[in-house]
Length: 114
Length: 138
Image (cartoon, rainbow over all chains, first blue to last red; front, top):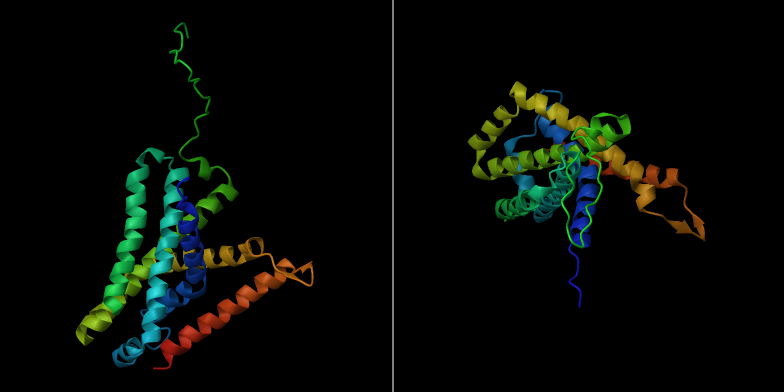
């Protein structure tokens, strides 16, 4: 039997990550990267954010928010390096860097949230 | 050109034109494509920021104060601003492609593209408002 190709699996992760990134990443970056640091909006207190983090659903949300978009990044960045810079000969290194990064990020997220 | 090409048995050499490494700089659609793909770097940076933030929140009050201090640094704010533009590029190009990826049929008729795109933008608005409400109400 022919070996099952892995590509569809990674493509699904890419696609789901793209959806999560499109819906939820902008608001996080806008609030915590721009609006609060620049004083456009009053920063939420440490206590209120720490309390939010106590909620298992919030932790699950943050886990998904961190994990899937990293696989989205891995896929896109890999092909940008392939096609953009035409460095196909570094295939293995790029794969390890991109998907390894996404897996490490997922593990870190899991460790931090549980 | 007086040298005969090396002969390989049963293995003809393919003709492949060399493409410049900077092929994507020549035309706006190509550049737009590469910029869209590179938006994923901004997505990854936001994830890294969020992970550091979660770590700081769990580490304690003084660590979170240090995080808040760090994101106020002009260089970090500048990086956040550029990343935000890329993240918006990702969201907009993603929602605009949604009708191509998701063909819906109702009663044998294809749902028009603008309905699917519009539904995605509406869902984006609701998702953003919900996340902001949870964060800001505290």
